[in-house]
Amino acid sequence: MQKIILAFFLSFFILYGVHAQVVGFKTIRVYDSSRVYRSGTDVRDPLHFRPVDLDLWYPASIQGGDTALVYGDMLRLFEERAGFYPGTATPEGLSRQMAKAFCDGFGCGDSVKLLNYRLKSYGRRPGLKGKWPLVVYLASYGSTGFENVALFEGLAMQGYVVLSLSSIGRFPGDMTTEPEDLFEQVKDAEFGIHYLHSDPDIDLGKLAIVGYSWGGLAGNLLAAQVPNVRCIVSMEGSEFHHYGQKEPDSKKEDSNFNRLVHTREFIDRSMSVPYLRFESGPSTSSHSDSFDSVFNFAGGIPDKRILQLNEGKHEDFCCIGPYTWAAGNCPDNGKYVAVLKLTLAFLDEKMRSGVGFDNLAQGYIPATMKDVTK
Image 1: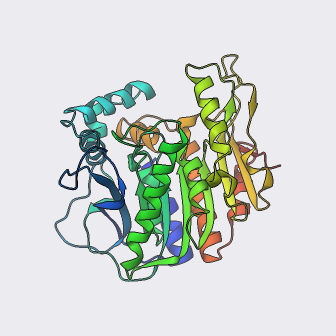
Image 2: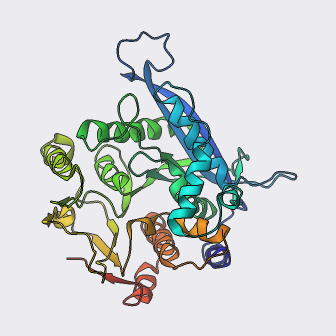
């Protein structure tokens, strides 16, 4: 897995002349004073105003003696926030529990190796001077950016700044499928972009939006709220809502989505921004999920591509599986690498007038994926 990704990144250095030698990472906690987070409090309460965590990956410079972060650093960040946003004690040991759950779920490795899996990111490295395009990432339902760190590192090494926004709903922070919670994540992203206006090394005239799962839906709504969006990438985004799924709470989720489609934010969503969607493919198993119908979100988008992973699963669009397999020295199914390569190529084409996305995509068809654009 590591050898494949490193070889891919090296090819991009040669092709595009990227100057980033390492990836810097930092997180900034800011407060949006236009939104009250915990009602019934006054301004002296640390959770009175809406807290927003801005996680940034960026091209950085080399400094001797530093050690790259490990995956456990990302999970511990999630653990800390799981206690901060509801205003409770941090659930100690959550990161270890998550690592074990990942290893058990993917049937590979052990939690200690995963927690100590070395990343390419270095904490608070000085950023390289430049004018780097911005990629805004919206995390999946109730999650943070630990789910797609490999993508962020690839983008930073290719000369982008990545701003990742966690999926945080209204107080106490739990995300739900209600539109009101979804809009909080969208507003967090708007606030984060505005906060970065003062950074001279970020080119806010070139902005891309990437979202995974629930974050894909949030990202598509964000595109109409901020200027200079060049493209959108949705990784199995929830904007294609599946009605009538045979799961608990599906009726409530259907009702919430119906409420969403009648909101002004949804009605006014952007239909002119180039749109790339990855989605899982139907399983050949008789135990595949069933549903009644799908909301065709992209029906009115003229510039779109929809690529469906053969035998793909929802988890194939994040790096948790590949990291778990790499840490445990287990075989990788290669699906995430394909999604990673195509995402980087698509963003480079739309953000920097690059070429090659179509040829790269064609190389994965039909063995790995199919083009289901209509």
